[in-house]
Length: 196
Image (cartoon, rainbow, N blue to C red; front, side):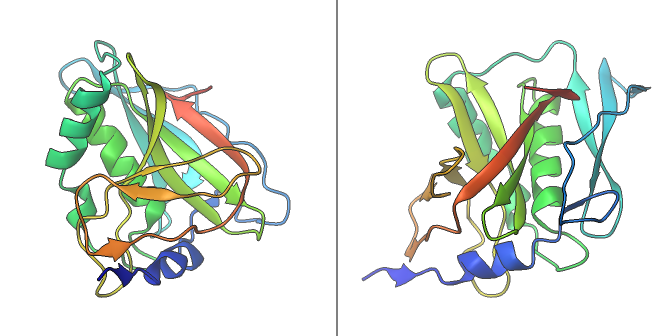
């Protein structure tokens, strides 16, 4: 018997990712800071106008030699990435932080990965990731762990489309059944500091 995962709504409700101006009523599209900060191994860091749970600016890695993975390469990366084991801590480490870490880890492994900002019809905001796979096109991934005693392995393929339910399908087997967490009103896919 599967356990219904009721915490799905909990982690979205507490997912306090907000634009830097902290206004939710009229959310503006993210602006990319043009300045790139060099890091090691041909990597750069780009800052976008969204804040993490603790108020830090979300920073995305940019790897000039990164490639678009195949679907199988993306799945293997997500299965081995440990971001979903991090603890969800309201006002400290939330969905935007999970998505930031997955994006940075993927770029460090040599795969292009986007950071995705989502607004739901009920006004809640969320963040996840996307990969433009060479054989299956754009695939959205959510690695946000729930609050509390939910499973630590919550890597999911998700449906992200305007006007459609944000549905999740676990990548690894689970005794939990994910639920829809709302209808997507709009979303922005941010690649290497550029909007798609």
